[in-house]
Length: 148
Ligand SMILES: [Zn+2]
Image 1 (spheres, rainbow, N blue to C red):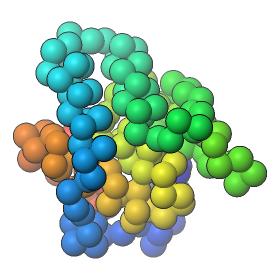
Image 2 (image 1 turned 45 degrees about the vertical axis):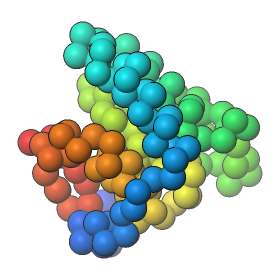
Image 3 (image 1 turned 135 degrees about the vertical axis):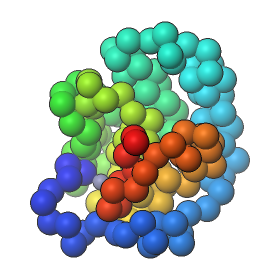
């Protein structure tokens, strides 16, 4: 979801961390594969455009096969959920900030709907378990993890 100014919809860091869990094996396998293929090998050599492309691959692997996501490079991260069509989504991606945690957050909305808490639980659970080093370098800013 686009992040509005209504802060009350956002969960706290404590609410999120109390609910995070080990992602199921299916997710662990997909994200591990993605890490081996892209993150450990070529991520640091990629320009932002290439990073957005492989983030799209990760995103497509995490949603159901019948889900279509249209990706729009813009200057912010958001996803538009169409109540008429649960299988079609538009995700905007911040071309200046190709971020795994942001991508996972928006995928969390596609899978769990509007709930900010559920989207945060989904994204932080994957990120904390699969990118522990990167997680330790981030800092909490309200409900969001930010680069230090
Ligand atoms: Zn959100």
